[in-house]
Image (cartoon, rainbow, N blue to C red):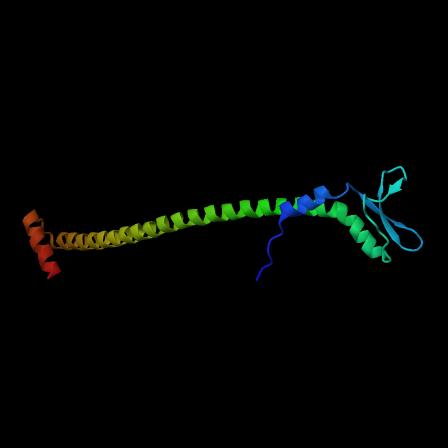
Length: 156
């Protein structure tokens, strides 16, 4: 069973409600603190946040999440849009192939009929040519009624 899709709107609401970033990690000597950095060296805690973390990796994860989560939301939205477009294109392609498949079936049927007709016409032409050669060899020049009799004899 596949996991439930992430509710990107809910995730975005969490991002929008959080204190602006980026956040940074500072070693206090007794633990790590997550703080806002104004780029001038002033550090302050996000409003209402108490951060004394004993593990630097945890502190870095939390601090990086402030910029990482919005980037992941944007990338996931873009990926979902590409998947949706690809799914739509795939459905259209399948529909077209289905139509072409029907057209191809009809074309194959028409080709088979035409081939059978061509084959029958070539057989008839061979018979007529054979009879013409027979008449030429016998030196007979016949009227149409005589040719009909010869054809009837040849079929019998």
